[in-house]
Image (cartoon, rainbow, N blue to C red):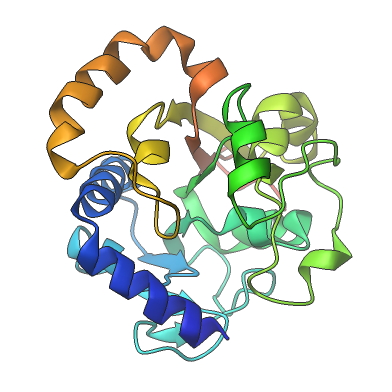
Length: 251
């Protein structure tokens, strides 16, 4: 099933220039936020592996063997030594995790001090929440408690709740900080006010041609103050911090 989904995504990538342009912009944003501490940079749930075009040394992974993944990796049981990684990247992955606390604990363990988790995921705003519910095939339930396990997501790597990232890192941010003081929130950014939903993404109906990119990008910049109400995506950066004495905080 995963292979079929990836084949569909590759076909969409090749046939939708506006989607390619948007994701390449987001990939540049991710690359610009990576930690430079020693260690490998690993992408979890790499899909069709296009982030490597921006980050050549990237280690790509997925939950099962695919033509695009270097390694098979479970995000909730990372096969890496303590403090060995510089970065973990999740593009459209965090909202698929059945046990987010377990992933965050594993991130705390495997990241070197100063290492980062960079997450690009759906954002549930006033506009995007009903749009996701009406027009997107994935579940969108903002009523959940963000850090609680969700057994329904364990049945398939494609099961999800698109609201998860919004709940954990925006609505329940204080709870996240209390639970994971060793993972400082370095940045939260809301993205994709118009271009992404109008592009149709990988599977939706395309509402604008690629030539609309320039004018719509200008409108997005003008609407930036309204991002909390209009955004469809978000970028979240976590950084592994140390105690005042220089020792890594315990996971």
